[in-house]
Image (tube, rainbow, N blue to C red; front, side, top):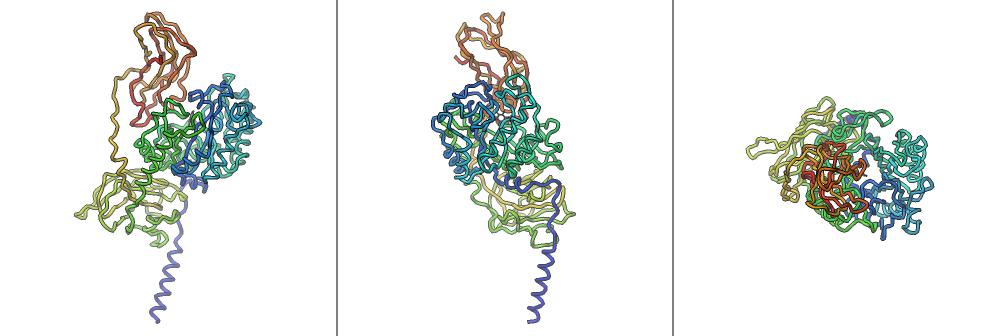
Length: 598
Ligand code: FUL
């Protein structure tokens, strides 16, 4: 009896001791609760929709007539049901793109759905989408471009107030907004002037109207652009960056956006925005160019699997629906992800760590397998190099290792490696990586083993991890990596000339940039024609290929009327290197060509 009494007292004492151990202090800058919840979404939908859907361009001039916006069967319920079935957690709509056209009626602008032919000017896309998102339990987000090629105030101080009123109206009329998407593009307006944006005012307006909304931009404050539009976060990816107090500052380098900055002064996790099609807006001609399942899986691994959120653009078509080709591909992706991640192969495993914070049960290594987000393994404060071993109940085969840091306490790990146990009892390395963050999915060779060891080799403070899992992906591995055509390299700084052989009526031309090669991509250009290849006549002023730096896809340019010529010359005026923006294996890979659309 006495023994039982002493054991009980001892157990209570041990329990009390272990619960006395404090949780690690937050390290560096940490995310707000809203930022943590935002990142837990992992995968959301972008919808580009507006006049460009009807004109087939990527950047509208702002001079488009409002009547051209006339979807024949708009159904935001269909967008929401597709997003839900795809496993996405929210939808962000281009409520106002650079052309200035607003998808909701508002007193601030006279270039809106109210002036369009759609529903006799009585329609409101934001209203329909916000209701559909509520019905399907999805977050509702808004993209509003400050660059406005239509508003007559653009380029004057007054415009900043106009823009604030636009924001107040959109953010105040449709209920909860989970993300405000700010494209910081700043081009010329209708009067040829550029705007000096008042970012502190814009950000404070969003916070006033929607206190929980996470604000996206190159500088945060909520989350940051990943630095490219090809769907690729850095293999090293910190959630912190350096910005000025008012969330402005010198232009962020694409590398810093892509990889973040260790020890940066602001928490702004990377958001990977990429389109399921080559362009952001729907075009009939791109129905056959929807990204393959293999490509989308690669994007998933290189965004969600690299401590980033995936914002996948699925544009609505001229009917106002998500096209069946896109929705089918999304369902294929969902089915593949479900199959890959259906079975966590750590089931029944036991985890032991070299170091457990204060030897406390609260921070035990077994927490790594507990699916409760707030249960984590932590080491003692002075330990920044340590390891844990996951012992499987029997030999199992996997090729993906998933790790998660408990980000409410900051991002800490800067180097780690993974070993597998051999039959002879020795360990052999299967991966060596840098950062983890909210979620890291490491590709390893298919490995059959009874135990896996994770070595935290470098950490900015004691490691705090809340997740470890093993998966087998037979789907992605079964795809043969596509062959990348090599092609002949022509420096793009030279003019590109096409000879039709004889004088021919042509309607326009296509420029397909070589995205990963020498010579760069033509951004600004001029077109000249000639019948003999000797004397040339300019047929255009200096023009720009829309958004080609961020998204180097083929561009089709149609003339206002047929031109009869034998030779056509594209003269580059500004050429840029887009290598860092392009995917490693891009579907748009190829030598620059200059053809004619007859
Ligand atoms: C870019 C824009 O210029 C594109 O048109 C698109 O909206 C993309 C998401 O952001 O900066």
